[in-house]
Length: 327
Image 1 (cartoon, one colour):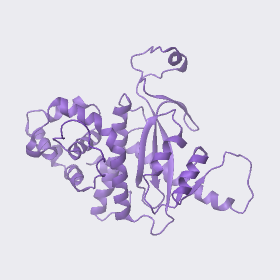
Image 2 (cartoon, rainbow, N blue to C red; image 1 turned 120 degrees about the vertical axis):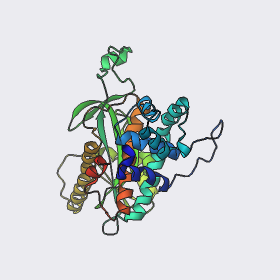
Image 3 (tube, one colour; image 1 turned 180 degrees about the horizontal axis):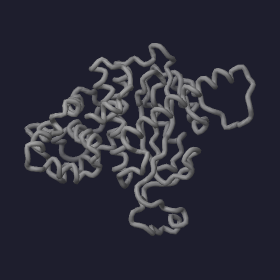
Image 4 (cartoon, helix red, strand yellow; image 1 turned 60 degrees about the vertical axis):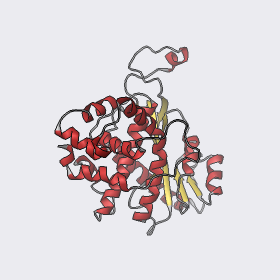
């Protein structure tokens, strides 16, 4: 049974121990929430670990009348009482709106636990990675005419050109990760692939801990707004230049070393992330909200695994793929 897996039950119960982001200053309209968001975070962890990407699939599993489903309901909800189907669907649909703040909050907590910068510069790496949309691509000729020639097309996705993958129709996962021996995601966003990296990263820079002093990125981040945002927060932007001419100034060797550290951190993290959560192929979801729930939920599950491994006395991401696959 799922609940007899010690690691699975441990990860679910650890959700109760993680810090929560501060509530919004203005209370949302409507009746007060009966079920806290934390309960649906547990369901999200279950969805990611068990590769259940559609809400109706998860509800069907939890509403079964057998011993395993009863144990799962008890693990997720008080007294094992499952919310109504409409409540279940509505809350999971709204969950992607709160995931960026939750990822930032848990990322700050992990920085306090792991202290990744005790033996290195207080630096982070920013980058985006392309994810292919499910179904057929929506070619620009058809898009400009407003025609959807195939029902499998995800009309909320868009095009981008990757230096490695070429033209990709889908999404971009924007990440900021610690440059240290342990890779801790501190901020994450999932947006259509055509949105510029240097625009999406601006609110993400506000999520960083105060102790961050260096923000490393490629040439897409080398813009005036990003540089001003870093300088306002007392940080230094280390970004590649768009000028391809060879450089011979005194700082070239230092910049080369910093860019090597950035590349090693963010590229290896993106590869690890896609391998763990099987995202090298097209995403199994359709629509922005559903894809945000999957991709940002996977970042949260990775953070939760780091939180669990810290309590086991393991202070790196080594073996984290096997750890999550066995949960």
